[in-house]
Image (cartoon, rainbow, N blue to C red; front, side):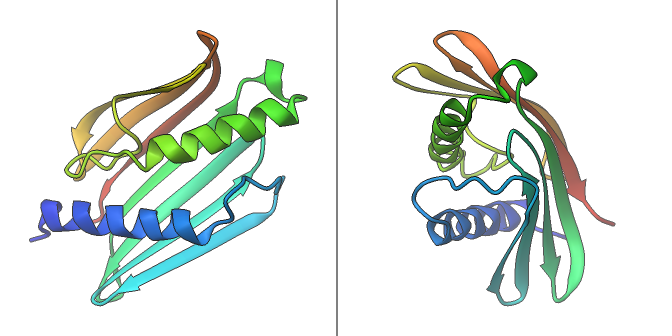
Length: 156
């Protein structure tokens, strides 16, 4: 049986390592594929993402090389902001800081709420690590500019 608390703590360590391995500022990557792997035997975390204004990411956790958990998310800047690269870069920089504030036992994305100056991050979900579905939004000056859905859970 998979210990969900142990999995939760591992996910946090892996995601923090991913965050610190990336450059400090968000770099425009457009449709390039970005891969990241973190190993802490017997656990292995991998992330695959692509896109810029609209993005997609899949995270996978393996235990002794067997896939045990996965989560996928897709979304991004609303179409009305697809030409605004400066706002998009600021939004992703803010998102990165919000995601680092995830709850230790609820590491689905970021916290329920996080505010920093004119940005506000909200995250709502149903379920737990075994089966999760959620949505995150970012508001800028009280207007929604970013939306993303995610889902995942144990692989049995």
